[in-house]
Amino acid sequence: MKKNSIMAAAAAVVIAVASLASCSVSEANSSETSGSSGNNNTSTAAKATDYKYGKIDIPGKDGALCGAPIYIAYENGYFAEEGFDVNLISADFETRKIGLNNGTIPIVNGDFQFFPSIENGINVKVVDGLHEGCIKFAVKPDSDIKTVEDLKGKKIGVDEIGGTPHQVASLWLENAGISADPSNGEVTFLPYSDGNLEFEALANGEIDVAALWDPLGSIHEKAGDVKIIFDLGKDPYFADHFCCFLYASNKVLEENPDEVAALLRAYRKAQEWIYENPEEAVDIIVNKNYASIEDKELAVDLVKSYGYPSADEHSGEWDSHVETDVKYFVDGLAKIGYLKSDPDQFAKDIYQKVDVN
View 1 (cartoon, rainbow, N blue to C red):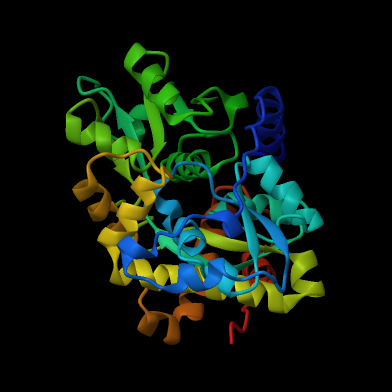
View 2: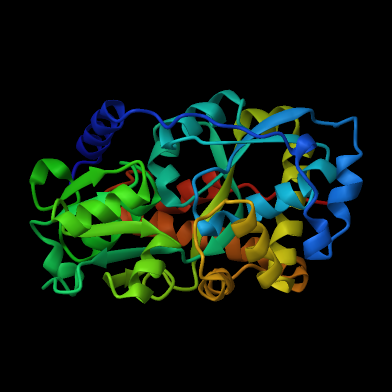
């Protein structure tokens, strides 16, 4: 399979899709949530008038439940504690790449979707791991589709071409011998900027499969509206590996490595707090409308399934785990032709260990 044809086709579709409208909210003006969570960091951070690193944009308004560390770092004041006045923005894959490349966005979360772009010249590095799981592929309850082999000739809905669900689906298909290259005609990917629109398309028969971020897939599964044929957190190939990594701009890494270290400290504080307080984390996420889910019990179960690390895990072999998973997915993408570089060297080149201390 030719990688260039895949990337060209993907770019064409992305250009054709309207960019997500950017929206932002300033952490400095965030209302306190510490009263319900039992955390006092927000009140301290809210008094801060001087931010060492100033105002920055971080993509964190996509509605995915697994964005919990971003939401919690924002709401509990961890970004502010580390010297950042954060604007949470909406940003599609192309916007994230551009922002990282020029340094206007210092850090983003994403899976191995970035690896081919790094090979093609985007100036970013993997600097940490964020979580496991969080994507499910749904079909109608009466669908004959049960396995990946049944997807040949089918239409698959995704949030965007080149995004995480699209890349996960591509790797799942290619590992089963089904080409994910649209020019080969074995599958068709259709982008929907909103998960609810994607679900409607599935219900109406416009698509055969909906690749959905949590919590939407899990909500409809519990309601009996869909059956799940793929769960990123349980599939043998993907289970116990990072769904999402953290990527830092090379420009920021080179010019101000302390800024990246400070950001990672904020993310890690949030991960550890979620590990200790999953119920409170869900309360914040739901009450602040970061993700649409009324079933808090389901939301807590999902958050627990993402494998957020404890403080002990962070102080152990955490960085080695991140580096190993980078190599794992580099090998997988190289095997199906998505990467042309030497896998061993490429994996070393794209990962950078950051001293968070």
